[in-house]
Length: 421
Image (tube, rainbow, N blue to C red; front, side, top):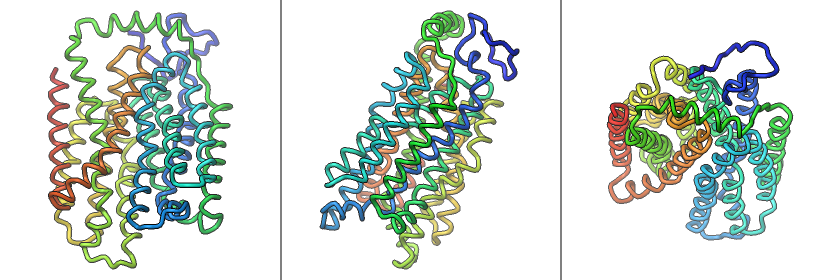
């Protein structure tokens, strides 16, 4: 197989047999910078409504406390549900029409929808627009497809780790910004500001991102390479590897989100006063993202050196071990410290999984495979709070940590089995 090179010879006409990654070897670093900025801004805009979402729901005419909580949960989850449904479709279209058009589509779509959310007249429109944001958006997902296919294979883990850091930073900064902006420009003005920032990302994508995409040529090259790469590789083994990749991707966000519905109640039981409960809960929620930001690129680079399967199995086991002590903490700061450690180990999973996903299929299907990967991740983000809430209600708050740790350990065993296959 012809290898990608980090310093290709200067030529305006790459060899005819060059694959997609080789032809874009001069562009992927600049594209990575733009994608990190775009992922950061879009995820800031999507997550900044967390602090004031219940206030906006009440402003839209919902009065009872239980209804406010219910509609807030539905509105928040709608975006991730929409992304989970359409990510494979956008990935397949990226394979047919190019990665850049999918980035532009996501940025423009999200800029428009985010602004429309600020014009919602009732809670039904809010939920519908949040769902549409997920259906037509997904800039971070499209970025994963572009960088995952453009970066040289020997640097893919590092590049996806950097991209993951930008997304995590957006999820971390969003609630902090959302706690400040409504006091200055109002709730509706905050949505308009979010739409404007995403529009800037759209312009950066249109004018700065470069892509050399020729679907017919890529299809011929991919067929040739696929025959040599998969020769002797049993289909059952490939299916097992793909299944392990998708299950692990879902478990990453399921584990991170399983405690979210009950974390405020759990911290309240640790002696935190009611006056400081919301602020403390928000800080603890942000700790896992902070930990992931510290190690995502390093663990991605480690996967390039020692292999993705090794990093995945190790990170799953370490995450399970850091999950267990969270059930026995007696102070909120202990929980925060353990959530940082958990985030540091979780950070190695997504870049390693993305690298494996790229290698598990031929080049002409990489976008679609990475789309399925994104769908699995967002499914975990939807299922995590539901699973955690059900376990917390029926088995107790501490059981959430035990069950999640057991699921992570089982996933590590599954990954080990798939690697052996």
